[in-house]
Length: 115
Length: 112
Figure 1 (cartoon, chains in turn purple, red):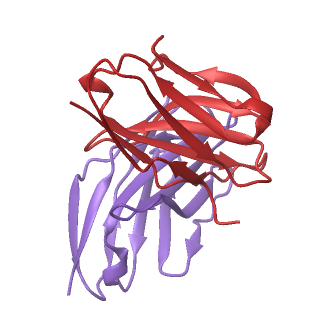
Figure 2: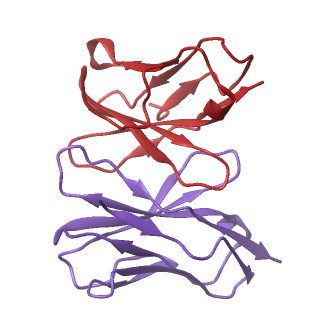
């Protein structure tokens, strides 16, 4: 079975600085998707960035980028120029190529942004 | 379309009572998912519908839990004879066949 591990329960970053959130996963599949979701307090989860395993190029969305290391099964999220609105719980998630598209989530990292 | 909506947002009930949650997905989405999220944990998959068919259920979904999606539109999740361990946030998500999941704000259940 696939698993997703986030080893940093909490992280803190100064406004305008850069922070990296870690994620590792375990799978025997060769083709899959990886995601980072953001869950602000009392708000719905929203997609931050996605990576397709067959693509070697790391995904980038504005201030958010990933470092995808397929052999190491590592998928970290880098947030540049951190803003107060980035404060939230961040979840790493895995999705295989099966029919359901269901996501398997890690336990999350709570990011605090200090002004 | 304002996204995935869930009702009620908060529910407090006594142990042994039945509760029902409703999810209205994004209208053009044929896939619907229920997840459960407890404090300090990531969401855990409960069940999946494609149109009106329930195609997958997690072993987490005990006999006290039942989900329906009549006519492939809204979905309901019912918990019978609630237990304190059922206290959690119940999240609904929907997607088209291409896959990105859109989540609702969740229904928080507290069982006293």
